[in-house]
Amino acid sequence: MGKIKFFSDTQDVHNKTIILRLDLNVPIKEKKIQDFTRINLVLPFLKDLIKKKAKIIILSHLGRPKGIKNKDLSLMPIYKFLKENLKSNLFFFMGNIGDETKNKCSYLKAGEVILLENIRFLKGESENDDDLASKLASLGDIYVNDAFSCSHREQASIHKITKYAKESYAGPLIKKELEAINSVIGGKKKPITCIIGGSKVSTKINAIYNLIENVNNIVIVGAMANNFLFFKGFKIGKSLIEKDSEKIISNIYREASKHNCKIFIPKDHKVSNDFLGSSEIKKQNFVGDNEMILDIGPKTIENIESIIDKSNTILWNGPAGYFENENFSIGTKAIAKKISENTAKKSLVSVLGGGDTISAINKSNEELVFTHLSTAGGAFLEFLEGKDLPGLKVLK
Image (cartoon, rainbow, N blue to C red; front, side):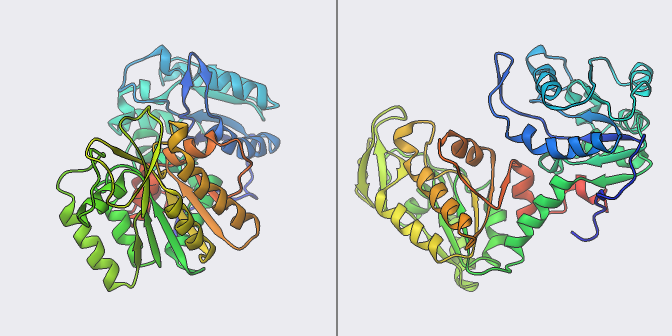
């Protein structure tokens, strides 16, 4: 982490043009933003640059338009929100990257901001195209990547742009993200507990392998736990399960035993015949053939709360159940509340990541406190796996 070049608070940016890559990929429905988490996180840095009289060019994506303009994936709603929340002149440019863009950006005055339209409308973005990267870099004096959640991708505005930029740095959100994750991987405050949810073992297997060496406990929840229950020979009815995961799970238990890492799986469940149904509590191995496990039960919640109480560091990635239905959101809410309570008491370092985890927490009406809330999904997992993310590697 120390090798990465970070943007300094003391850096002179007066009248300099900053090309700022952000992740403003937020859920939008009928042109209205549904979740402001990612945008709110970038506001302090933006306001600081404005205060220091920098000229700011914002690059971001929204969705996966695959190089084709799509009005439903326009950054216009984000532009409107930023315009209301930044005390500065803010402009929006919808054209292609080239001489016209350069001309528009050249008119920026100190403290002004321009947001360029969805960078993924341009085919060259996903292709990590040299020509697009060169044109983007030519727009300013300093390039800052503050989009950790995109840094696992080799794309023009994340990766190749650094080849042509005069100066390139990682931003404050990336610095905070890496410090938070390294607080877990570095194992400074033990015992460390990792709570892993989600549906597929295969997508998180490498992260789990890497964590086993560094953590004391791994708690498996969500649909992923179905695979572990099935591996142990317990009845899971028609619950969601990943085929051919037995060998993976066997290796996880073997590695855990080698590194003295305890693995916990649910002792009871909330089940239903369908996703929209009401819930019924069933003990481990008492799930009916026509039932699905959709949440953890009260005994499992009690067990997890006890583990959290005995931990000094928590990493949580993935909800405990099908939280979209209130009947199956109890486990996720209970875990969030317990982690928050212990974090507020300063007895716990808590790092939470993954889109579904954030969505589940945002559905709660309670005021919750965590050490670090990561909006990154794939990048978060790949970093946990120990991978050198392409977007960060070029900033070393």
